Image 1: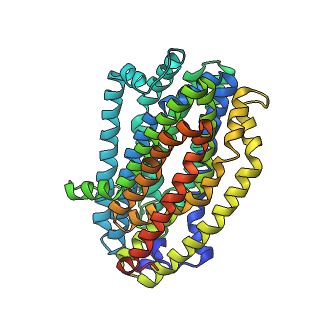
Image 2 (image 1 turned 120 degrees about the horizontal axis):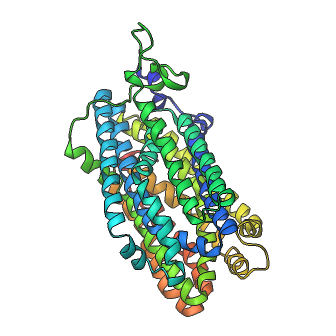
Image 3 (image 1 turned 60 degrees about the horizontal axis):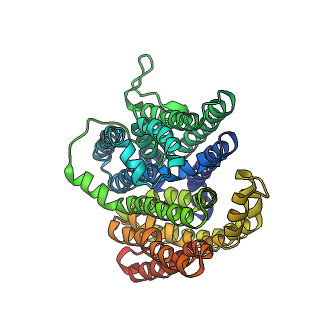
Length: 466
């Protein structure tokens, strides 16, 4: 049976088929954004705004965990998709298994270290005496679920690489819905406070982790005397390709390449951790705990609205890797041109949407007339301008990761999420106060976009995507 029938990545993509392939990843990320925001809304409504602030205080730790998982997932996806494109499917499955096991081991190490140094971590994040108890209660529970969180991130990416993005979408939606439901039960019905939020989120991690394991064990399932494996969700082996758990072969070079290729994703999350810390420090100095609650609303809303870019970039990355690995440059160029047009159109749509719906979004978290609402609403008059530029930066970074150039990918991520943003956060608030906090992100995204476009143009002949 030829490769085109086995692996969906090998098809010749049109605008419609590319968007259809990427759509599950987009829906997955949008839904993740919705249920992440759902967590914070429920915490604000059924506990108090201090709980909302506490969640944002410990967010840097969560960002670091997600960053490590995404580094392995995105970088490993590139290695696996490239080998699948070159026809080395068994080796690709061995590498896949090695990457998943490495993620689990890393997650266990984080649990141990996190629990031992829990108080020191929270103090280092700058929690005030008023917020310390909330932070300890929330993070102490959530850390226990770190291995499941790592598996969720890994499977979310690698199921796409296996050519089944819709399966990943169903898993994420199901896990997210369960997360929000459990949060409501634990916080509203059982009145467990912020502990209920952490417990609901942790159980939500476990659902895609367990189902993902079953999904990739499908090669070992048999029904009756059939010589063919039975596959979950009604898919045949031909429809799902040959990516599955195999006995791993320890190849340090594979782990090194995965970490190198995916380091931009880690850079993004580490930078997000640092900048979240800086946002919190600046706002608590200028406006106190209400300022932290307001910036929390802005940050989580930003995550929701940028999730469309992130999901699309995740969805098309294996396609870019596959055609680059198979040296199908005409198809690579077609896919790339479609992606650039999509990013341009969506950037304008998201900007318009965020400007129009700003008051409504803020009101979901904090009622109109409260101090938190007024602070956040002011930010929403300026902050959305960043959406005109950030899509180009997210896609450019993801594209270079897919092309196995982790260095350029990391450069873009570093400039976007740390270098320029940190510079403007230090400088602008000192000059123009809170207005400088709101301006820091749009200016940083704009400057980064100019750098990203320059890198795309200068490398067009090397990778043949333009």
